[in-house]
Length: 232
Image (tube, one colour):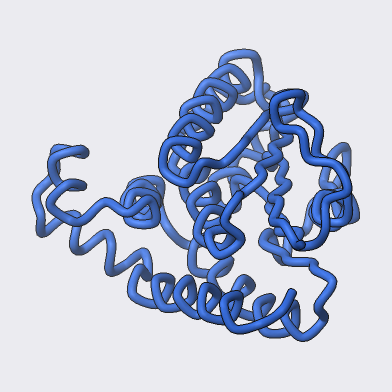
């Protein structure tokens, strides 16, 4: 039986001062609670900037990954949240926010009560993240921030281009657009988003359109159909 795990690390986290790190950590706590409530996701944050999520329904993992990406990118990090000698890296966070990898494979041990996740799925996702860390590099070049690795090369070959295209789309979105995108991915309809954000419907609709929701929704549906029709 195959399982789905997401691993991720915050971009430019070490450039943040204490207020910035606290802001990230408190928001990740909120995110994990919301993912648990909506998708029954088991999530945890390690060392402040590294996130791991076990997604019980494998068909949800693409949607959950994009929800995490959008949520973290919607966090407002200010110049005052960054160490003065590292402010050049603030743009990296605002553009990319977090690197995420989906791992799909077997798990030899799964004991969520005791926080034990062991096996191919978590190895796949963790290795994808650790292979291209930006920590402590003098010059950082980021090409992609969304990845997938499974025991099925055909699946990876079909899904990775979708992730790469969506990666580019989300990198161009503002914090406010990502906020709307996150709520869309979490299943809120436009009327609910209007009430939740206290915005006009025309504003929410415009931000949703600019954020590329129509294309992202189709990509999510495509992944769900592929997973349902393939043995992974």
